Image (cartoon, rainbow, N blue to C red; front, top):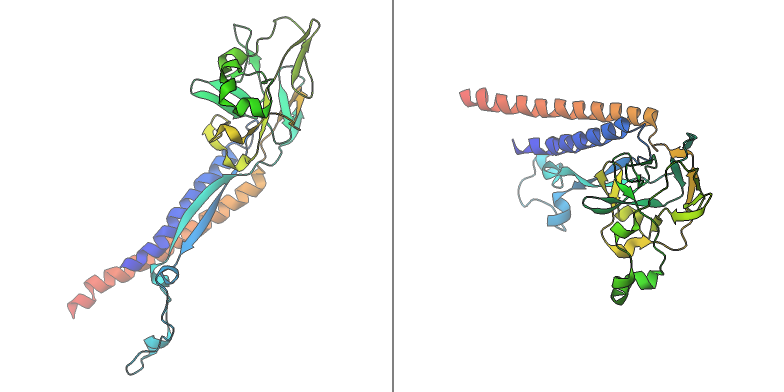
Length: 280
């Protein structure tokens, strides 16, 4: 029976929802994690094919003529998209001078093997070369000292430092102070500034795993006038409310099970139609 595809599409969509919520719950204690949420859409045949202005049968009426489905038997549910909720997570003190927590909409620039990426996971450390790195070993970059116009001007490309030239190096065995604007200070003075950027459209960011994000285009990055503050000795927690997500996970599981019962009912009806009615 073709009608089985109606509940089946809903079950597939609910399975995606369960997987998304489960991932949120699994990262409830991940530093700087931002939860995801799905958006669903329903497709109705009547919306694409339209209806007759006067839907009156030109024959003797039957009971079925008074119960029009409007194409609902060919409807389907699908995942329209996934988006990240960028609400601020709680800052927790760690008293580690290399830990930084961001307050605001900004992200820290880091250099990965696949290029520059952005993160809010601020539990940093020093590698053997004295470079400031993330817990995955990705090197933290220093801020670009240039105007937005110069950064977008192709003629200025040669004068702008490459990401490899912007890697932050910190002297070992030296007390560090990180100011609210990301500047790193020692007793010998400033040695660099952590690159904290914001985005014109933060919902254009895409997750890449390991709390890393990528932006589709350079023009989306805002480097000047950043209002995000850097808090030394703090880490930003996940913005996942574990109790709320577990409640949503239970509801999604129950919805999934109810759809499964509908599919079983369709399957039973189909079986009877093939086996019992065929005997007549």
